[in-house]
Structures are given as C-alpha cells and as structure tokens.
Length: 459
Image (cartoon, rainbow, N blue to C red; front, top):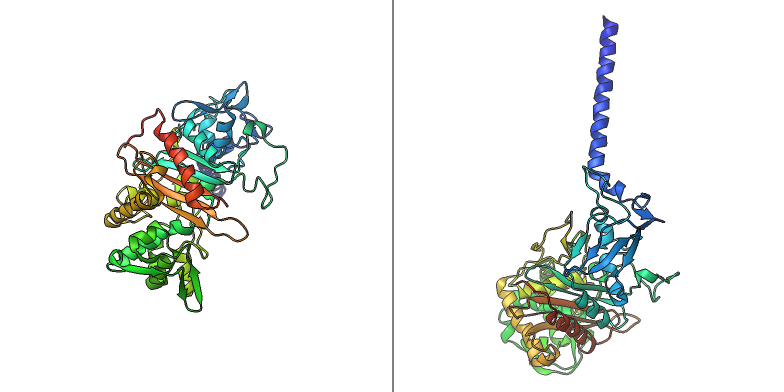
C-alpha cells in the first residue's frame, strides 16, 4: 500500500511538473513568439541576415518607401527619398534600432499568435503606413544641405509627424562597401536617428526655458529694464554677449538673444529654481515615439557656481538637449500648455503607442504658454522678420550653440499660429554655424513644402 502511495505521489509530482513546464512554454511562446519569428536566423523572412519577406512601408499618401518583390527588399526609385527616409524606415539589417523595419518587424512579416508566419512568403505580410509626406521628407533632407543634423515637423494638435530626417545617411540601395564610422568621419553616427536619440548643446534656444522660469519666479520681470554692456560679470568671470544692447526690456532681450540679460536672470533665479523649471518642462525624461524611446535631455547644476549657472541660463555649460524634447516644448507653447507626443506610424497590425498621447512630463501653465506665444511671435515680427516665413504667422527662437573644437550648432524651433496650419518644427544643424543665418532658412524650406502639399492637415 505504501509503495502504491509513493508511486502515486511521484506521478502527481511528474504531472504537476509537466503542466508547470507546459505553462512556462506557453507563456514564453506568447511573450516571445514574435521575437523568435522575426529573428535574423529565420530563413523564411531573412536572406543573408537581411529582411527579405515583409510587407511594404508607405507614406501617408500611399507612396511605397520600401517593399518586397520576388523575395527581395526593394526601395523607392527616388534616390533622394531613399536617403531622406532611411532612419525612419530603417535598414534591412536592423542596425538602425529605431527604424520601422526593426520596431514593426513582426507586423511587417505577418506574424500573429494564431497563425504564426502562415502569411509570410516571398512578398511578405502586412503593410505599415506612416504619417510622413514624401515631398516634405525630401525638402527636409535637401534643407540639411549635406551636413549632419536633424529636422522634424509635426502637427502639434494631433501628434502626426509630417517629416523626420537625420544625417549623415546613405542610399540603402547602394550601401557603401566600407563606411568610416570613427569619430569625425563622414558617416559618424550614421545608424543613429538624431531626432530621437541625439543630444546637443542647445545654445540660445534654451533661453525659452530660462524665460519661463523667470516668469514663474521673478515678479514683474516683463516690466523690468536691463542694461547690456557687452558682457555680464559674475564674480571674477563674465558671460560674453553677442552685442552691446544698452538699455533693454525683457521682450527685446529675447528678440535679440541677449546673453547678458539671461545670464543675469539665471544668476538671480538660483540653481534650485532653474532645475525645478527644467524638470517641470520634461527635461531628464524620455518618451516613446511609435515604439522608439527617445534619449533624455540633461541639465545638472549640482554644486554649480554662479558663473556656471549664468552659462547654463543661455544654453551652454554642460546642458544637452534632445531635438524631440524641444519640438514637444514648442508644441506645448503653441497648444496652450498641452504637449502632444509625436507619432510616425498611422496604421499597422500592431501599434506600439497611442496616437495623440499627451506628454504629462511637460507641465506648462496656460498663462505661461500664452505669454511665451506672444514673446516668440515678437521674435519673428520684430527681429527675424515675417518675410523669413511667408504667410505662416510664425513664432520661434534661434540658437547658435558653441561647442569645443568646431563651429556652433545652428538651432531653430517654433510653430505657426495659423489655425489651418498647426505645425511645429525643430532644426538642429550639427556644426551648422549661426541659427538665424542657417537653421531659419532650412526651417522655412520645409514649412513651405508642407504648406504647398496636397494633403490635409487636421486641426
């Protein structure tokens, strides 16, 4: 009897172990099935470790960016569009981790839990439609003028990305046999999408953050007058200005991007207040853009001296910002304080994030947003000139960020106040020189291409 009992116990243990193992296998299959199916070792969808059998990636108008024909991945015949959309679409090998062909691979190859890869064949599975417009995409690529950097424009009401380019890039149909990816090379950082994962010294664009902090912490700052003598002395050092502006108002100081005034404001505000505003505006946090995680912007005044804070207040010191973060800040100001997260995938069998998602990391009051809209509009009306953005009723801020060992980064970010054109843009030209001279014309080229496009921009 005891023997039978022992055997029964052993049998029950074996049965329990079997079902536990079966449950673990089922759980692994559910959670990892798409990853296993889309592995580069899977010869059903990969040839020579390159994606071959997959659906098409289309722009918002249905134009094919890349598709599978006769068991091979074929890109659009437009060479400019191929290079312009490389970082967004992604390469066939999967080196560009934020590309659609990597993040949406299981959808493209037609995998699902019930049928597995039943739909996968030589011509692939499901198509993925993006929000970008091909003509705007090419305009953005051309506006980079062969340099490194990024440009992105989006609908700040809905979050739809209208164009997103990053450079350096290459033609995926004719990939260079040997790319020099060493520091300073022509292809340095070629697999990184600079809009999503780049961080750069912001220069004077960061004065928008300092201005918001001043509005919240310095009573009547808009009514104050300041004096610029060409520099602002702090202790034994000084923050040099880009001119001698004399007696100047808060608004005019932002117009002409007076370093003296904003260094003075930063000194008055203190480390804690500036840091609190930076955090309130979402710096130091990341978001997902259609499944791709952005890189965090960094701002650190821990133990910073007053002179360091002065430089930080004008976008120098150790501050590094992500272009996507700056675009969302522009959108928040335009949108009455509400920041919408960009998205680039319009339709797919599997959407990796929510369309029209509010970025709750950016907390901007409606009052501050209203004031900053007026100030950024004043920049264009009273300093840059509306002729630089014809018929766009534009608002924005330039930046020329000094970097060690090279030309300044040329920045511009801003937005249109036209109700039928709710578009915000960010331009960062790596070592591109002066923001007003280089980033502003680049922005206008893209904005005019979007304005002249045939698709409707919902608002």
